Image 1 (cartoon, rainbow, N blue to C red):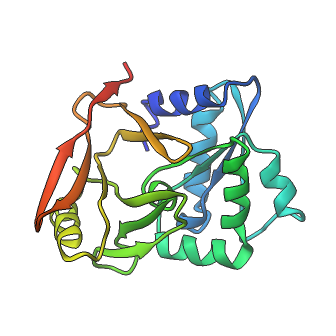
Image 2 (tube, rainbow, N blue to C red; image 1 turned 135 degrees about the horizontal axis):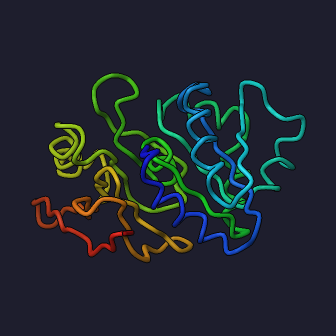
Length: 216
């Protein structure tokens, strides 16, 4: 998302804790956008890792083996609804759960952040609306919290109405880091970026800014 600022990408690489880390970009949500894949390759070619990408439009002969070779799965943004449909068709969600349970680092931006939670807020069908996701992490996720005008309002109203469970609003440049299924901490690539926990208590929506660390 920020080719000139790879602070979050370096942070993600550090979590694998091994040399020659295999980082697999999954651009399903963008329809395997060639520009997006090229941007990933240009950025990660400057980092100490082995970048590759996984296409479900031209899939590897052995998808399970391909995923099994990866140390980090990095999911790109785009249409979350399309991503979930294709992953279900190919059984990729189950393979990613197995990878997660083996200690593979799972991460992503936009659709690639939403997908790991029980639910998310997406504009995949035009207007912002809830969507059911993989459910590795409890609650909901709403990216672009400071980047798109209606995100905060619709998220609050969805939690109030009960169409979304409590969850996380993420500014662009903010990342919530879970270890197993528990929130460990928040890191940011921008000094002004924040992450928030939004919940419902006695009929009122509460938004709490989470303590974060800026990756200078």
